[in-house]
Image 1 (cartoon, rainbow, N blue to C red):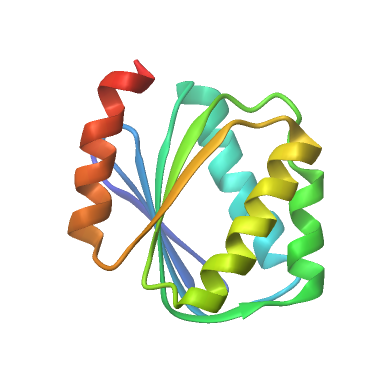
Image 2 (image 1 turned 135 degrees about the horizontal axis):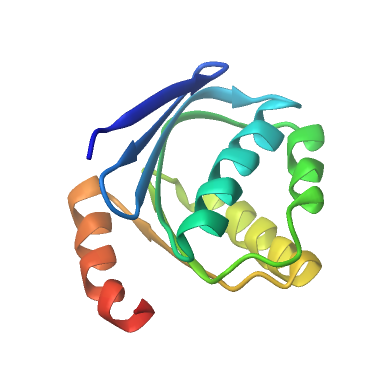
Length: 134
């Protein structure tokens, strides 16, 4: 199985073989970009039934208010999924945690998430979670 790659604005998206989606954020996440990123994620999640999402935000520039609101439009019927954030400073972790909780509340989605300093540690967490998600 090959790797699928695309760009959404300045943000790189890569579907690795199996159930892993890697997103690398560069600069601010603008209105329209969050909706496009969520659509890519949700389409794959709904098709596969589970998904592990690694978000490297070490070079991200923050979320615009418009981009945060775009998460409200996500599907209400998403399977449980796992998200690992890499490179988030403490204040960003607080904001992301609030956004994820609000999104879960609004959509009913079960989103397990954690924060890591490296992609290797995030991938190790995914390896630990895969048997539990089966």
